[in-house]
Image (tube, rainbow, N blue to C red; front, top):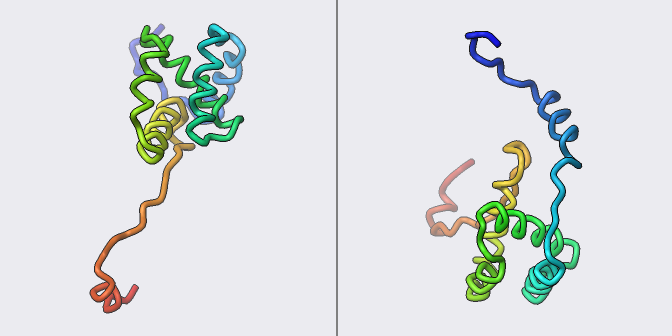
Length: 120
């Protein structure tokens, strides 16, 4: 140990550390909870693979926060498709590296009469 500040890690060091511990933390969930979350997202028109991926993230976060997953599903049931997509994007971005964030496109809603006079 030294009194010097820690050196920032290079990106390749972060990748190696991530994959060194990739299989250390096992995700274990009750089968009925997993099936319920996957079924919820499939019912909301998610593809099966996407529903499984999102379910794993939601279940993991519920376990970390010590919140029953069924109460999360009750809350999410009132969301429409757009609200749910924004929420899922936010949850996934919290779990990702900042260099691989997900996003969505929102078209500009400017006045077309004014926009035609702007030269780009």
